Length: 417
Length: 152
Image (cartoon, rainbow over all chains, first blue to last red):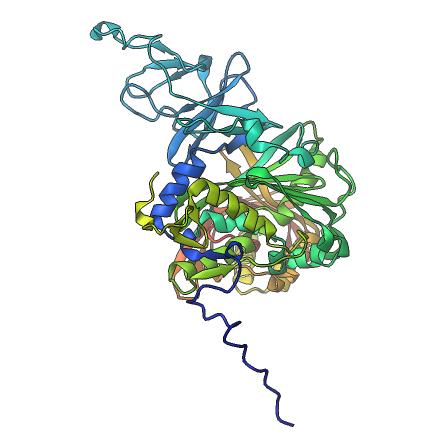
C-alpha cells in the first residue's frame, strides 16, 4: 500500500517564515528584539535603569560596613550597610575625578569609611565626604568636606531582596507599587534566608531569552529532569500562572516527584510556608527569577552586556541557623538542579545560545508565543504578559520593532531614550 | 614500595581523566570505593565562601553519569590534562594533589580551555591497587562556558 501523504496546508494557514504569522500581534515576536543594538541600548535606559532592579540579598550585607559592588546597565553601583544599620546605594564613582571607588565585588569598609584609592578623598557610609587631603589647595567652597558627596541611588529592601533604581530622573513607581502582590506567594518561604551559593555564567544570548525560560513551562520538555519529575505529574500540568501587574508572574505551587530520578526526598527541612517537595516560581520584571523547591531557593538575575551577551548571576539561599548536616543537604538539593553542574541550568543555557545564534543570523524573523491553556503550566501567557510590560516601557511593539507604540513606523536606530 | 605506589597512583589519576574524556563511566566509577565522595568546590569572592558545586555520594555520581546521555548538555569533546604534583602516604591511606586543565573541543573543531583546578584525592588500598575514597576538585575557574552537568 502506498504511503499516505498529508495534504499541504492551505495557502491561508501556511506560514512562510518571512511573512508575518497569521496570529494575533500578541502571539508572536519580531526576533530583532533580541539582536537590535539600538533597541538594546534603549532597554538599558528605559528598563534596567528606570525600573527597580534586584541587585543582591540582604545577607550579603550582614555587618556594618559590608558592601556589594554591582553593575546595573553599565552604571557602577554599590550598596552598603551603614553604622546605623541602614542599607544605602551609591554610584561607585568618586565625585572628584571619576575613579572607581570600590574595585572588589564585596568587602567591608574599615572604620566605616570609604577612601578613593586615587587621591584619598574619604566618604562615610552615608555618602558624605569627610576628608579631602591637602584641603588648602582648594579655594572654592564647593570643594569642601560636607559640601560634596557620593551620588545616592534609590534603594529598597523587601523580604531580604535589595533593589535599586539607577535613573530616578523621572518620577516613577515606589518599590511597593512596583512589586504590588508579586512576592506575596513566596514571602514566607524566603523569610530569614542567607546566600550560600553564587556563580556566574557568560551566556551568549540575549537577556530576554533567559527570562523566557523561567516564564513558560512548555520548555520543561527540554529537561530530562523536569520531564521525569514534573511534567509526568498530572498536578503539575494543572498549575497556573498568575499574571501580576508590571509584568511580574507567579507559577503556583506544585509537587515534584524527585524520587523518580533517585534525587532523594525533600520531605525534611521544608521551608516555612511550603509543603514537602513543593515548587513555586516568582518572576519579577525585568530579570529577577525566584525558584523555591521546598527546601532551598534559587534567585537569578541578569547583567545584560550586549544584545548577544548576558551575565547570569545565580544565588542559592537557605534558612539561617541550619546545622552543618542540614546545610549540606540543602546545598546538594540546590546543585542537583541549579548548580553550574546541575541537571537543569546548563540545558537552559545551551538551548537559548542556539536560539540566539539563529536569530542573529536572521534565519528566523519571528518567534511564536501562541500557546493558550487557561494560564496553565504550558500556556505562553506569562511571555505575553512580559512583552506587554516591555512594550509599555519601551514604546516599541515587540511584534514589529519598526512600529512605535502609537502605531507609526520608526527607524529602530533612532529610538529616543 | 613508595616509588611503585607513586607510579600506580599517577596512572590511576590519569586513568580517571581518560575515562571522563572517553565517557567510560563504568571505568571511572570503578576507581571509587563504595562509600566514596565526589565534590567540586570553588572559592567564591562575591560571597566570601567556599561553595560546593557538586557534592555526591558514589550512588549519586553513578546516577548522574548513567543518565548523562538523556540530558541535553553541550559538552563537546573534553580532554583532561592532569599532572600529579604531590603524594603523601599514611598507613591507611594516601593523599595526592594534582593540577588539572580541561579543554573543550566543539563540533567545529575549536578548542578552548574550559576549566582549571586541582584534584585533592584520598586513596585507600584495595587488594593490590588503590581506590578513591574522596575526590575534591577545587576549581579556579568560576565561569564555565558552556556549563554542563558532567563531572570533571
